[in-house]
Image 1 (cartoon, rainbow, N blue to C red):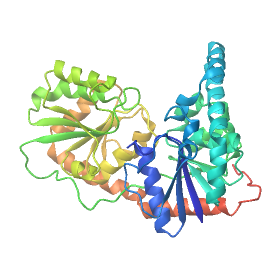
Image 2 (cartoon, helix red, strand yellow):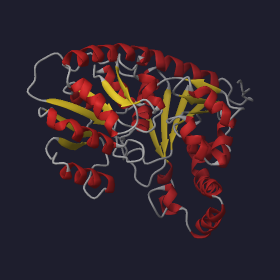
Image 3 (cartoon, rainbow, N blue to C red):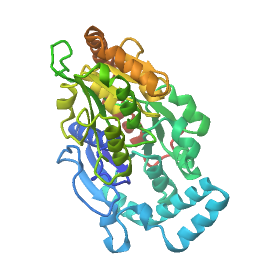
Length: 409
C-alpha cells in the first residue's frame, strides 16, 4: 500500500508521544514493505526527534510555497479580517470561534494538501490529530480513505472540539480509540462514526530496572513534557517534599521537553523546588533520545497526569520493570495499572500521591514484586500484535478507495 501519515504540527521540533507514535508507525509500515510518507506543516523543514527509516518520505506543506506564510506555525498565520471575525464570534460563543478559526486554517492549507496528495497518490491516510482530519476531509475535500487516530480520551477532547472535527470523524473511514472503554464515549459524540479500538504498541524491553540490588541512592522518575494542566509535575514535587526527610537517599528526575529557563512552568517548578529546600534532590533533566537508559537506572515511576489517552511513557516504564504510582481518576493510567499488583493508584492530591510513594519507597520487596508484574502486564501490547491490527485496518480502508465506505457501529 501507499500509506500517508498526516500530522499538521511542528513535528520535527517536538518530542512528545504523538511524534513518537508517528515515527514508530511509519517505520513499522515501511519495514512491512509499504510505501510510507509523512506529511507535516511547519515553517521549517528537517528531521524528527525520533529515529525515522530512510525509506519514509517527508513532505512539508509550508515548504511548497514559503512566500505564502508569514509565521512558521499555521495557527499564527490567521490574521487580518479572519482574525477580527474570530474575535467577534468569540464574544458570543468560544466554541464557534474556534470552529471558524479551524475552518480558516483549513482553507489556507487546502491547496498544498491537494498538491502533495496528488504527488503521493496514497491508498489510505492515517492522520494523527482530529484537527488534521478536519483540514483533509472538510477543507481540502480529500476522497482518499482517512483513518483518524485518537491521542487523548474522547471524553476529554471532544466536548471542546470544533464542530468540523466531529463532522470529519463521521466522514472518516474509521476513527481509532486507544482504550476499549473509549468506544461508547466516541459514539456518544459521533454516532455515525466507525470506531475501532487499538492500543499503542509498547516495546518489550529485555533490559530491566535493577530493583533487587543494594544501592546507595534511589530514583523516582517522571517522563513527559513540562505541562501544568495535563502532566502536573508540581504534584510530584509537592508529594516528594512530604516524604523527602524520611528517605534521604531518594531523589526525583524529570525527563522531558519544556524545561528550559524562561519557560513559565519550568521556572515555577524550579522556584518550588528551591523553596522546599530540595535543590539537588529534584532535577529537571531535559530530553533524552535514549530513555531506556534512564528507566533501567530508576526505582519508581510517578505519573501524576490529570488525563491521558494511552500514556506511552508510563507503559514503557512498566515494560522496563518499574512499579508506578499514578492517580485513579486519570482514565489512561488507570487502564494500565492494576492497583496493588503492577503499581499503585492514588486518590487525587499531593497527600495521597505521597502516601503511594512512601509505600513503595519503604519496601524493596514491594517494588520488586510490582515491577515484575508491571512488565508482564505490558506483554499484552507487544508491537507485533498491535501493528498487525493497524495494518489490517489500513488495508481494509485502502480497499475502499474510490468507493463509498459504509460506516458500521
